[in-house]
Image: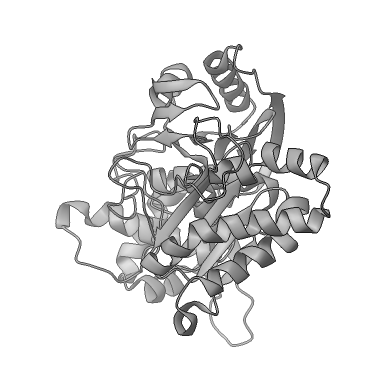
Length: 394
């Protein structure tokens, strides 16, 4: 993903299969900066789709008022979007006053499908087929092939199987993967998958012949939380699984970093008292303390009460996050991972540590909460990436 702003949707001459020019997914303001004439139509298409996505069915007159576009422009755009299969008429509005009732239009949620892949699981890959509103209509899970298995072949075959099961035009495929991913969908490094410098986006596109967007799994997850979960504009989502990573939004815009590694907090050292050895070779990394495999092992071996172990792990996370919260003035931290590990003593200790290690008057009200998106947050984030890249909707 890039940090350049909201994706413009396809132009009047382009269809759902047009290649995305950018991958950022953010909610844009409806009346923002000036739009160049050559981009105006694509911008207006996205504006209409974005409005319907968030506000639901409305009349053409309502759309005109909400977007600031003329009724003639709205009528033309709606007709075009109906022909393209992205908008549908939904009957008439019930009114009590005399006059012709208005015809309502809405996104055609069933008109296209999105395929999402989550490659971040500790023991499996998860895939899904989603409608345009993020509803998962098909969900499948396959075993992780392991370090000695054919990871790439497994991913390609799984994606192909899901595309074949769409039974509707495919808007695109979104993939959330662990590791560092550049803005072209190349996995720079993903030790948990055994990938290094691999063009996953290109490989999928060559096999599937549909638009593909690949991003880090935590970056995908924070987009799902922002679009579907009501997250604030300045937020950090910490994803705890096989590894530990985070996705960041500042002012509603994804933060990616100069090396595409913003949010890679798993190998920040959070102990001066030694600690477990990490897979990277260092001692005391955050991932070695709080990843699901590490934390589960510590709980199984602990002589201390489990709540003490979880509180200690939550404090370690708070130590890692406090400088980030202070530097970026974040309003909330969202946790994504097994609720039985993260919700309760772990989250409470994280919040308390943040409050004691940041400026009290400014950050004493910072929220630390579990995501409400559940285990499929990356799948839904992958759908947001496709919606943004192809339609300018997020």
